[in-house]
Image 1: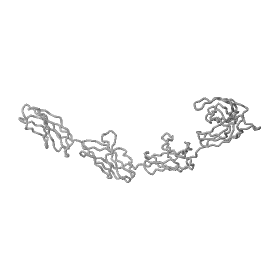
Image 2: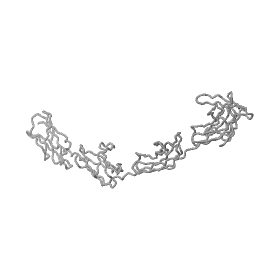
Image 3: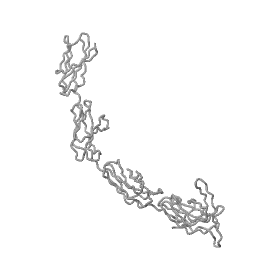
Image 4: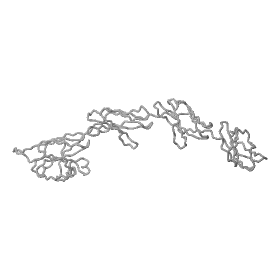
Length: 418
């Protein structure tokens, strides 16, 4: 316990609970408090003093009670005061005890591990008090840190923390904190009960190191010193699959294939069907091939194929998505000749240069019925229309058809009138 003499005495007007306290004047005849003992806790401090309620001749003193003042180290520093030269301008009246027989007082809601200064005076009649006691320096204590915190990563994207129970029975919970990208600790969870010592941090990034610390909290809400920082790294993803291929020459389907992955229990196939960069899961398989059936000719699709580990997590994606496509339509022929030959009309076209045409079909539309007729299975590049009438317009176009029955777009049309 340390005492400090005040260099200057002040009579102060103090406020408390929103009310202005009545100023006290000093009466030098009132006895000062002597021999003040202290007992500090984490957020509180207790005082005990010797109370002489009688004078040496046995007559009662004029003491009506006691007045207590407090200042904290932070305020003193702001006021540029030192313990060797304290003034009363930084002190606040915190208690008025209107009982001359009192010998004890305790102050609460203090900050742990902080320095405070106290002044005591006896209270007299008519708003008077004695000279102040010597300033008493008090240091609040602190809760020891949790001694053992262990971080383990045994499953993907999850880190398990194990806490050694705090030996202080006043501990009611633990606060789990994790360091963010800017190096600041943020609270993740408060574990209720001193023996609740296990925490799982999940949904983490793969192949990433995380740093943790733990704070203990007592029943009064006081927080311990931080534990030592511990770190753990989440598990690596299984490597991407290799030997991936995708077809481009099959009608209305794309066949995917890849090499077996030694760590994969299955595979997931994601497809960007709309070509907008958004991949959708289309299949999960234990095979090393997959056939994607589509509805459009010449449709291009990008794929991501990933191995799935024993915990059900996706492995690394392909560095470059694999792109496949359905077989496009054949090239349309061009009509090279259209002639009226007596009672018939002759249509001739060229052979498309893609070499896919195995046969052709001709479309005819007449101005009388406005209907489309189709003439199928034409093996040559020439067609004679024998079903025509005088005075009617006939419009013709031609398509090529490949071995899969895929039909090309229609050629530019020609119109004739007999």
